[in-house]
Amino acid sequence: RNSREWVAFDQAALGLGLVTVPLYCDDRADNVAYILNDCSAKLVLIENPRLCQRLAPALKDVSSLQRILVLESDAELPLKAWDNRLRMVSEWLPAQGTLMEDKNESGALASIVYTSGTSGRSKGVMLSHSNMLGIAEASWKVVNVRTTDLFLSFLPLSHTFERTVGYYVAMMAGATVAHARSVNQLAEDLVDIKPTVLIAVPRIFERVHTRIMQQMAKGSAIKRKLFDLTVKVGWNRFEHKQGRAKASLWLLLWPLLNKLVAKKVMDKLGGRVRASISGGAALPPAISRVFISLGLNLMQGYGLTEFSPVASVNPEDDNDPSTIGPPLPGVEVRIGEDKELLLRGPGVMMGYWNNLEATRQAIDPEGWLHTGDQAEMVNGHIRIIGRIKEIVVMSNGEKLPPADIEAAITHDPLFEQAMIIGEARPYLTALVVLNAEQWPEYAASIGLDPNDSTVLSNPVLIQKLQARVTQLLKDFPGYAKVRRITPSLDPWSVDNGCLTATMKLKRNVVVHNYTQAIEQMYASAQRS
Image (cartoon, rainbow, N blue to C red):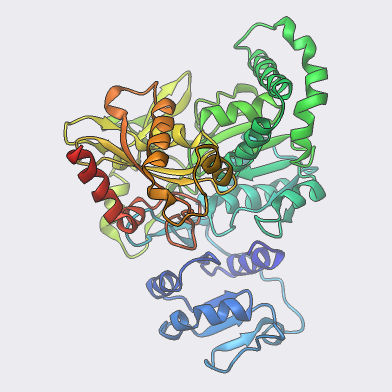
């Protein structure tokens, strides 16, 4: 997990000219084995004996491995001598170290980062020292990180977003980094650490937003109106600062609204956050609007592992939340065929490890990286409008981005997760995961027993949920109407293989897991 030891290992390896390959602690053993074999890893550092035991079957067949190091001891689970390559770090390290002189070439391979792909096997993205440091420096200039800043690192350092912005940028600026104990303890750590800079993915903001909305729903009408007024005035305040709106007399109320509402929310983030960067996926506009209105300096950025990974970010003084910001200094942007976003600059990867064909498909002869995202330019800012490979093409020829519809559904706190089905189908259906906290009260409100094992297939429930989703999608075109729904109470997670380590939906896995339910939705719709 994120720790000083993770950083020390990374710095030592890079300083010696070695190549690091970050792994996710919660990744499946078979995927870990695939990565270790694919890159012919020679040494692996594992946090504790429990994790080592879980990965033992995968490590056993990696012939390239010369050493397996375990960082922490565990009295309840001593290391077994199942492999003569095993060593405790405390016993393996010499009593004293020697600082090595850095003789690396800037263009030399520094790290192979395996993408947590939403389909198929992960590909190893080769990044050089200049790739990562070039993007880190450009990001530092735009975000304006200070030596007095304090980061709270909770996204996995195994992902290039946290590694570059939450680690390399912070170190380059001389800032301080604290490592959170876990995502489950994040709320406590935020209050204790009081960070000034937050690096997060949309899922974090979505969860906090859901809790806020749940509290508002349970509160009095006066409390809800006060919150709505705070968001309205706060948004006008933000737009006025950005030069896009005139000052309103309502702004005179801001000191009071800030004290009664906004500050209480910001205090839950530690009370000192002066900048927060959201990346890794699109942040729904309605959610970003709430946080910005409450006083959070929230700047959305964009990137991908193949670009080391940041390509653009909204600067504080030119922040358009409907976009992913202007390109970083030194980054070129072009809109190609089918409105595809093309990137060129210091972040373009060296290529995919052991995969020349995939490299040729990703980087054209002129050096442009093909992102697979559709975009448009708006006042010098990039706006993502879709994903080429994730556009649902219905059997009637209509095309639509499922993420937009899913975001509209999950804006309702009752729906924790949603996935749209419709590729080569005559109409849309949806798989939805209901919020565990909202579910018992909602079921009771419509006269159903939430503990009944058959309740999720109850026609009354399906009809009510269908009507709710229809209302949520009322502003979408007619062909975007969802005709059938399958609800579930089992969240899609990294552990069950339905999400990547960066919380992106693995659509093919979900479809596979719900094949029967999907076919029943279309069969029942056809019968009716």
